Image (cartoon, rainbow, N blue to C red; front, side, top):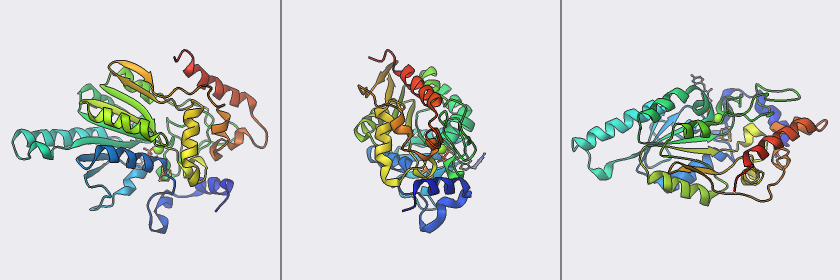
Length: 306
Ligand SMILES: Cc1ncc(C[n+]2csc(CCOP(=O)(O)OP(=O)(O)O)c2C)c(N)n1
Ligand code: SF4
Ligand SMILES: [Mg+2]
């Protein structure tokens, strides 16, 4: 097995086709893929995925998909508009009696953070405004992973990506997509992660029981882009929750809840130092100022959480 440093460096040098080698499209230990599997286990085959271009698009190579349900591939910016078209078509077919009610499908947008936090945001906002009946699943691997992990609006402060390097890494804060959705007062919004499968399954069940715009924002640890071994996927996910850097939350009935409150929280450092993208904060010398700033931001979120 290659050591982490070599693999992380090599990842940043690879062209966009790096995921297609070796006869398999996806990387081992992909947190996004595990989340999609867990979500699909709950939703079942009466689902149509409307997928914005990204790593998950590699799951489906026309005319095949690994799902029993349906799959529609769209450009990065327009998956919610594609979801509207599919929903409208299904509604018309149902109204005209061309398909029986039992052939109705749940419409699920599946998009990465690059699409969701950036170029697809206006299509998302319009879909929420129209009250579109869809579940939006954002698998957030905190970068444009499919093209070599360039920085996105979801990249955390201080992380290194293919386009943010040096002693500090990304100087910007991660955009609050969950907060943007909540500000639009959707029927449902939640954060989740595959390494907390019971929490995730309950949220998918809840979301599936509701109608209207619904968000499931899933943190998707990415060994290739974040610089950890595939076998560490679940541990990285658990650390994200145990340190509080990724809060598990739910917005339902107009109220915000934290679904897992860990006391005491682990220092955020234990999550950061397990990943190549933060190595510059520890080597060749510790950057205490940045480490304390990251911890301060995490603590600020949890202040007053009961
Ligand atoms: C308008 C546009 N720009 C660039 C691309 C090339 N592209 C394909 S996938 C991708 C990365 C998407 O990032 P994200 O949405 O986070 O999904 P991930 O790759 O991380 O799964 C990019 C930049 C594209 N398909 N469309
Ligand atoms: S680059 Fe990351 S998100 Fe994309 S398939 Fe590999 S592990 Fe998954
Ligand atoms: Mg991404």
